[in-house]
Length: 194
Image (cartoon, rainbow, N blue to C red):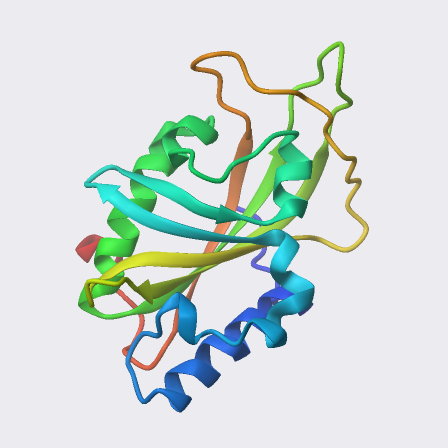
C-alpha cells in the first residue's frame, strides 16, 4: 500500500459542508438535502450520491459531469457493480455503508484510475482519492452516501471519449492504493466489524 495522502480542496469542501449540516440540523448524519450545495459548488462535477438497493449493490442516484466525462457516458441510474471493474470493491461499498449505520464514519480511498484505451478514446491514467460520507435516506435510515473524487495534483488526466459501454462491460478500472477512516464523532470502526 502507498502512503495515505491528505484530503485535497474538494474533499475538504465536502467534509466541511457535511459537518456544517450535522451541526445546523443537530443530527448524527445529515440527509442529502441538508448539505448546503453552494458550499460545495466547486466539487459538484466530481460528486456522486449513492443509495444501497441490495445487500451487495447500490445505485448511483446522481453523478457529476466531471465524473461522467472521465468515463465517457452517464453514470446516473447505473448500479455500481456495472460501473466498477473491481467487483470485490463494488460489493464492499454497500457493506461499508451498512457499517456506517451502526457508528457513522467517513472513508477515504486512494486509487489509480486505469481507463481502457480503445479506437475511440485515449487512456486516462491518474492517481486520486475518493471521500465517502454517510447520508440519511428518506426513510430515516443511513442507506446513502455522498462521495467526491479528486485527482492528485500533477496527475496525468485526460478526458475519456468512450460512448456507451458494451453490454456487461464495466467502465472504471481502478486499483486501490490505500484506505483511511475519518472520525465523524463516533470513533473509528474496527475493521473486523465491517
